[in-house]
Image 1: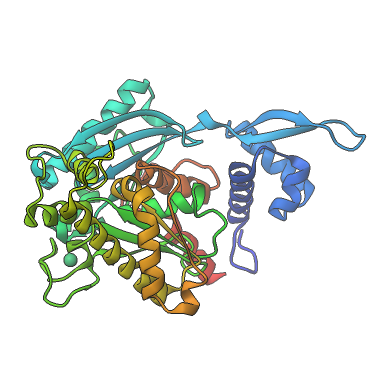
Image 2 (image 1 turned 120 degrees about the horizontal axis):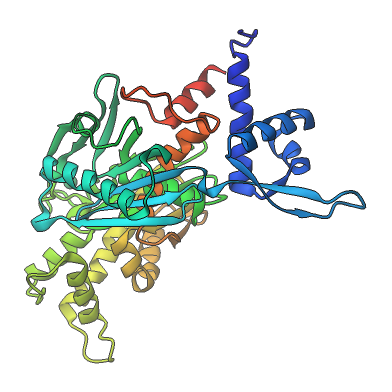
Length: 429
Ligand SMILES: [Zn+2]
């Protein structure tokens, strides 16, 4: 049956389930009484929807609170074990796979280092496949309990109608890779578990906005500072965030060669890989035969000796110059997007942050327009270096909410991420 607004009874029921699930998830535990004003539903609708969700095993009781003189009110929450999610971070140094319950508590994890920075598609697909198998094995979880697998990748992700997510990862040599089709063709995922692919900076941004230092901000820019750099812009207009290819902003005309092939990109100066390369070029003793994280640690220790010894002036100079490049790069984001908050995440950003942040902040504010600079705060992300996997797991979680907590139909075709459906729905309302 279709109403005058074009929405069917089924749409309405789904929207009500979505509203109750989301409020319980983000603000719960809540009583039925509190759910009314929180969702805008009548008390009768709340009772019906809650009864449905309890019958489906998605909502459970979580104690009770006294009401003013009346009977105690039962508190409700989303049942953490009613579904599981997998988040995958295809990073620049490793593929990390984490299995979460619905409350995003980690249940199991698997890591596959990328030897010699080899990003061959077959290798990555194999790492994802075996990583997913490993976390399912380790947890003893039946694949049918999975609500989906979310994957964060470097590069621009295009959602196409026939091939699903296609990745344009110029810095890792991926030219229009139909990753979603490849994963489906290789029966990566058991049964019909849906898979969602998006840019890693965007998944990080989503995680910080939903659960981290971005909560409550109207607009924020979340920076992923790892081997390279990227950013995610979240504003009321693009509420689920948009990846911006910040690393390829030109900061010096005819400057250093970037991994993308162009000259003078920010990523050729900032990002752990270029930091270490520049230290090496200036004569720094970059430890050979070690991974990037250990090498960056050594650079930091050389610049700021923990025992109070003599600082390596070259390491210090390269780090200080990088802080200025980062600050200048942030000032462009401030001038262009006028965010209320800037959050710096990513393993290198978080590692350097405590020493780096005051200088980065100072440079950003001095390069930006004064009026805009006065309105922005620059802080570190609060979710730690694994935030990309948390953000990747949010992709199937958002889809689960958008479906009103129903499992996806067993169709194995490419699907649009929930946020696209949500935006379309909003546009036609
Ligand atoms: Zn570039």
